[in-house]
Amino acid sequence: MAIKPRDNETFYREVDEELRKEQLSNFWRRYGLLVIAGVILLLAAIGGAIWWQHRQEVEAGKRAEALIAVFDEIQAGKAKDAAPKLAPIAEEGGPGYRAAALLTKADVALQQGDNQAAVAAFKQVAEDGKMAAPYRELALIRQTTVEFDRLPPAEVIRRLQPLAQAGNPWFGSAGELVALAYLKQKQPQRAAPIFAALAKDESLPTSLRSRAVQMAGALGVDAVSDAAGAPKGAAATKEVTQ
Image (cartoon, rainbow, N blue to C red; front, top):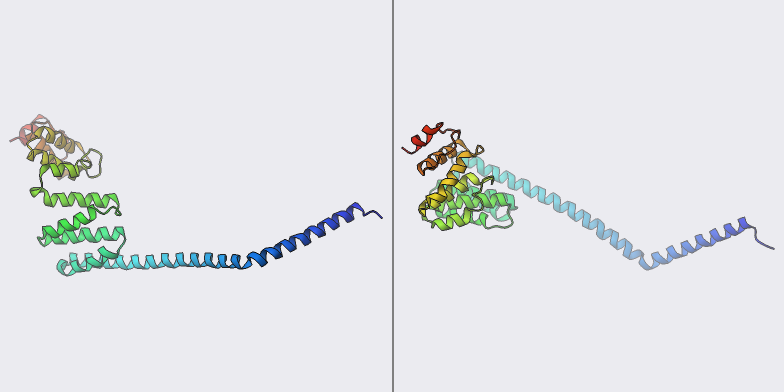
């Protein structure tokens, strides 16, 4: 007796379901423990990551509080007592906290007349490739400023030439030091254009631009007549050269 088409479909469906059940049963018998172990490891990894992130946030909060406390002591005139508290932050903190602690340590050393300690702290930041470029560049400029009088002019230029470019965020500080180094080398023809560019840069502080106008005028360059704080017109050059 022939099986009806509908009965055939039912039969095939039942066989397919049984086959799937058998395959699933075989899979769990072979790999069930591995799957369970994998899920446990995944959950453990996620939990560990969450715990680590929370711990990092807690530690960062503690360092921030410690750094703020140091700043408060410095403002209260207790820099000598605050300085030792910067060491743990500089040693154990992340790059940002380490940079802030070392730069503060250098400033405190300068206030206390310890230029050698200040230079060491600035140098540590400037040479740390893990810190962000702005921290390293600031530290390099501060270090060079402290050492300027005893550095060969060529070394000042080598360090700061890349930063002494119009448009660079550090153009003001780096440009002025490089221009002064050229003057020490008796190369006024190289210093004058830098002073003139500084005088034209309206983003720089008025005091720096005024110095640049005076130096450029003294070197025979007609600096920007509308530089902030500078005299106007042809009289400007005459006044700054007197």
